Length: 277
Image (cartoon, rainbow, N blue to C red; front, side, top):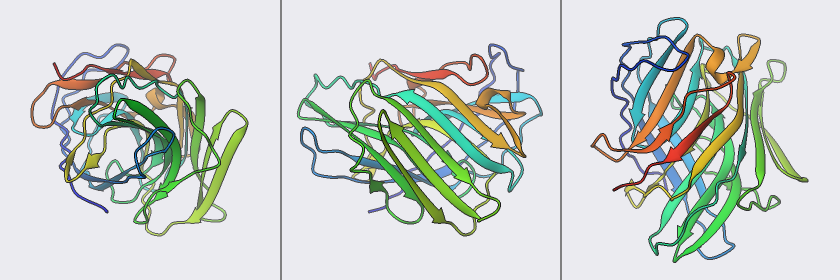
């Protein structure tokens, strides 16, 4: 069942390593949805993001904007409408620390749209801690439909995941693909009314029971590669003119719980769990 939660990106000026300083302000509203499988050891969790309206984004060329989000950490590369045709990400599934009996969640994914539009095509992995045990899975989603768990891909902590979302200008369809070792899956869907002006590599905490969940404890969630194709040009997420770096904060305060690193080599970054203390 879809439920809403505010997503606000606040203005923050900061000198960024290897980037221009920018004072661009961007504010957005997003909602996130999730459908749970029964939480027990070995049983997966499906997590999905469903942004509704991220508002106007106005970034200077060759600039990176650093903002705060209640739900997301990671990077989005922005382009003109209709220019984004692919995003590809590779990450290692983080090991969740489930020493606490609390129920906590984590999702890692790549997607097209969703940053400043209600459309979103995405695929990735999810993890949950419940009763001291961790479970993991893979999933794909095309809004407004619910996410689908990919049962043919068993996900474990430490697995190397490669996922992509690709738009064909010939067939006008999206293909979501994800691989974990020898296990792979792809799904091609026709999607109407997409804007295709943003590509994302994101670490997320979902909303559960009409409130934001707790971010599961991990060390780092590392994208060894995050690349996109905008306007026919393929490059690392950090190489495009409009790049948006997002730190995750705890609800309405400015306590960072998921810290996004600078991009190295144009395409590598990580999100560090900072905790709630």
